[in-house]
Length: 97
Image (tube, rainbow, N blue to C red; front, side, top):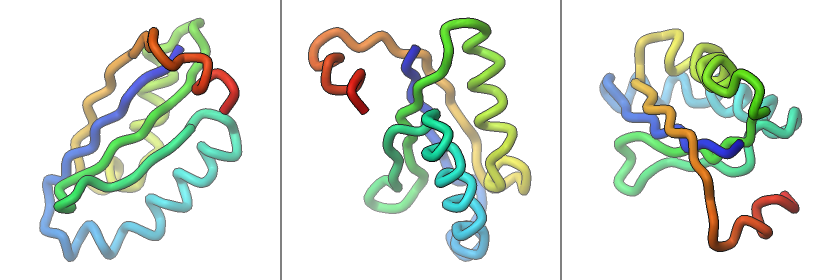
């Protein structure tokens, strides 16, 4: 299953910037595990988005675990909106990532 995680900052940008290295290190771990396909901040920088791939078995728990491991979430700096997603057009491009 694919999912989108929309991250919205709830702290001043200075606090976000102070935690960004930890957040990106966490995202690199998710990328290495095959869970994260792509990520990046919004422009202007008010949050960001993750494109995720998780197992269909207990997908909700897997998505919660992604959120719960993020330093932005742990430090109360950002909110997460987790959206399971079923791409139709272009899915073959995602499946090879």
